[in-house]
Image (cartoon, rainbow over all chains, first blue to last red; front, side):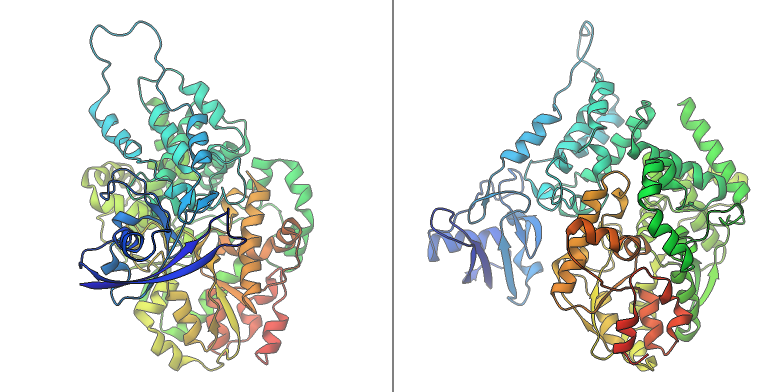
Length: 321
Length: 291
């Protein structure tokens, strides 16, 4: 038997001016108990006013995502024996980036709104085949990863970009978008990718890996976003800063083996960026931090010819695929 | 120990003080740096969006160069370690993919067999040098200095690629800070994103991210920050004046690269470590240390 010591976020907007934390000591839990098991015992035996969502207790329904010690997790998939083997205090809070309805329950409206924005359905064109649509097995194996999403909201909770801009479609919706756009049956990929390339879409992800880390079903949303970026570039949707950033980055590395950070932002974001950052660039150059933008000041790797060969070989290969 | 040293583009570009300070502290710590002068950029997660096989092949070339020397590969960049380890995992675990990549590599005279361990100066300090050993080498303890660690994303996440420190509750930077006699400052933002990757795409969001973490560190009483990632350093230090304007508050928090902090504790002069190259002055911190 183990003991859980919980510090739980409490907030009832109808009664409380401010959120506060309550602490609970839960005894007599079986060794294999989870954070959710402890919370249920609190609600049933200690404090019936504690409000939370939960259902399957098996990491299938996606209802019980909370922030546990600061990071989003499914309560039912988080073993106390690993998290707090010596009865250490475990802090449970509602998911981030969402309005709190009460205690550990968050308003999921924003989450579902973003899912709807990416139009998560397949649209085909032309006459349907006589029998079923056929998709290569390897493609379905790959699409299985975004299909594993249980819509728990953990990735949205811990998304670092969403904290700063509510326009961002966020990881769950973008992973769902790849599930559709990456499906060979989908006939509207170019249209979908055009919309996804706009502000708040695929190019606003900062690649912080938080969503990959917190996802309880290994959806790896950031990896799906990177795949959408590749599809967008392959589709010729390159008239935006994000795509230009990637293209000029690759070009710079192919040229010398080393990224030239001085010219990349100007090429990707334009002369306006250069003017806005001229003061910093001059100051950093005077301090000897940044080399002056003169010919011959950017280093090359010693095997630069081999780097160029690899680039040429693989870009040609990709172009012919 | 001998390591195949992969400085990465930023330590050779906009943060030359990182490469400089790494070279200064390495011999004092008993680390011999064999620089991989032929190794290309790790892709930084950017190149991967145009051609992931190209990024993996560049990284396979870098890994092959380290393997030919029979040495572990050490970076000084959170982003480089993340990208190199991710490619390494794919290449080591998937023999078919490795063979496909080697088909391209062999025309340049290289082949990768999947045997290289990719690490970072931070983890070399923890696992090879040892914090107790480091503590014994300190000549100028940073006593009284309150240092806020800032990890950078890829050095911690995802755990199945990194698997060295705990991404939810890392301790390595704190252990190093304590070993050099300083006091670590705990704050939520230490494992979050500095925003640098979207500086061009969404500058306002990027700078708000950086400003929030610098501000939180300052509010928790930090005299300075320390980071093992030069990309983070560019947003936290180089862009700090612009970040300060976006978040609407005076920040003025100096940010050290990890080897600079170590170097100060090992008795090196600030000038040798290139701290004067920073955008935010380190003078107050140096004065506090009597330097």
